[in-house]
Image (tube, rainbow, N blue to C red):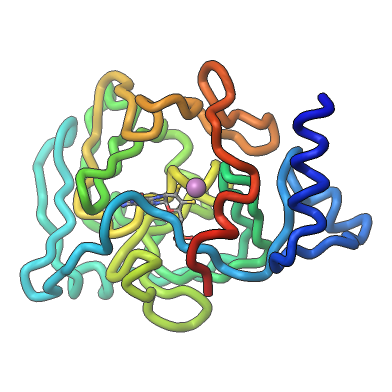
Length: 229
Ligand SMILES: Nc1nc2c(c(=O)[nH]1)N[C@H]1C(S)=C(S)[C@@H](COP(=O)(O)O)O[C@H]1N2
Ligand SMILES: [Mo]
């Protein structure tokens, strides 16, 4: 389409921190319709929530045998893993080799003896500001899905989700909720915030699952006008 290729030209020629001359290897790693940056854009709805670590809890509730509310200390005591993965935002930026540390979602369940009811198929991940996003339980059980507290060797900054965020690198990054405070196990799917507002339910970047219906009017260089570090 002429319209979208013009937009693509604009984003390629804009003074933004995009990496333009991709190597063959980089081009292969980049999902369709994405642009590579080595900056780290900051994107969210509403304000960065103010969180007091002393009272902060991660609630585990819904279709589990016993509901729990974990303190940050309890989470830090769980085995720590490090992942290095590419991340992809629906607004078309991708960033390669992002390094995160935290607790594997799967390990959290195992280590704490959280018995998920066999009927549970989806998890609603609750972030700050009533942000929520739905993810199939099966997607959360992979090796690279973390409840992350460090990015690039340092505690998360408030804007990137301190104290704890989800990282699901194989799905568009809106599924990686920041400031998580609840994991709600569900026996049926229910759309989260963006999923109710026109984003695709599944969000696989390699299948370009951006929108559920018509393409939303998100300018392709939207994120470049926002903050990044
Ligand atoms: N709580 C919360 N988490 C969120 C969002 C949000 O609005 N609120 N935005 C999502 C989107 S669309 C993206 S691209 C990533 C951005 O994470 P970053 O700001 O660390 O790059 O956070 C995701 N997690
Ligand atoms: Mo995003």
